[in-house]
Image (tube, rainbow, N blue to C red):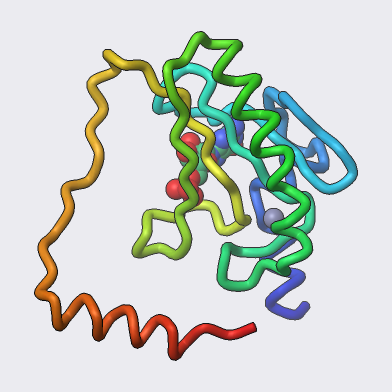
Length: 144
Ligand code: 5GP
Ligand code: ZN
């Protein structure tokens, strides 16, 4: 069995999509699936996934990514309304170092409340040189 097939067969989110593992589904169409996170940051925390398996942002096809964006907007609005949230965080962890635990690309849609007490990351400082060097490096590595 090649690596790609073995990854898909052991993927917990592929199993949720095909109904082998139960979930609280909130949306489904031909290409996308969304369900409640089992350990929500706040009530209504939803995971939006493309049905086609890819590990994360590094290997997903652009076409697959494009298919989920209209649904991201639709779901964000309906989740905000449903739980009476004041805002929404949209987060995707890509790679183990970024906190990714499930290697099937997913977007966390997290309802936020003015008084939920959750804090954002602190920003670092840059020198001007480091900042412009970093921007140049990123531009050099841009691919089509
Ligand atoms: P990651 O760190 O990979 O971005 O987050 C994976 C998310 O998937 C976590 O927030 C976790 O609570 C959620 N999760 C993991 N396993 C299951 C499951 O079996 N069912 C549901 N509904 N959510 C899950
Ligand atoms: Zn998968």
